[in-house]
Length: 300
Image (cartoon, rainbow, N blue to C red; front, side, top):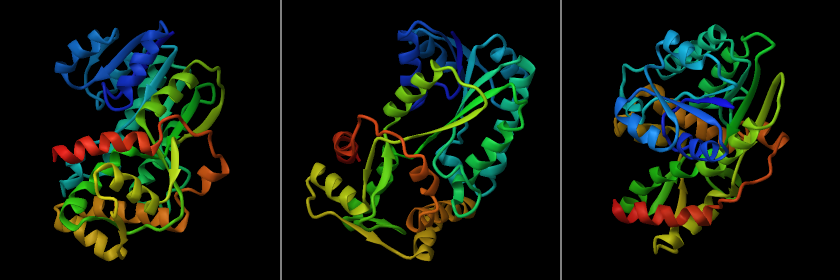
């Protein structure tokens, strides 16, 4: 099949491209960075260099594709830009995808969404995934869309490193012994590759997770990996957590959104639809990721 992959060669797109190329598909990778072209071609794919803000470029790139895989993201640095509107930026990217898909006549779309996309209330920053899904749902009914909803990424745990080093604990506004799901980007890529090769119609949803562990279990596993077997998880109030993010320079929009997202983990809002549609867990467990966490921890 002719498949278009957005997201350049990121944490998910790169292993996804590798899997699909090995399966013999013709892959085009969309990237905004010309310097990525050689790496994309070395992976056995064709590079399409252009902007996600250019719907005409996307339409030309999407033309003739059997499936288009779309994802939207903004650089982490934008969370610290007080003039950057995260919600508006994501909406703009998805509007361009929608226009390009219609112009190109694409009939099958795989969309990388997220846990929390089932609602726009109580999920904080993840509400942009709810918005994105609903923009794509405006496409004609003959455009089949499969919404992939991974849970929290393992590599988000790297954000725990500063407080581990300075306070000898993991600090957040949620915690305890209630298990929550986490996922490896490699399991996400594998699952998306599987779904691409399955026929689908209408609008479908699939959650993706690798492991389920509680915050206290997580602290114990990571602590053991980095030589801190007594590492603890400390829960602080929402206001204190948000103030810490603001003090670190995060924009009010991002700080409020992340605080509300974590509160949604605590009160169950974030995971209510996940548990109603729970997937089979992937192969890469937290204990596997802990080895990579150890390496990054020791480098910082």
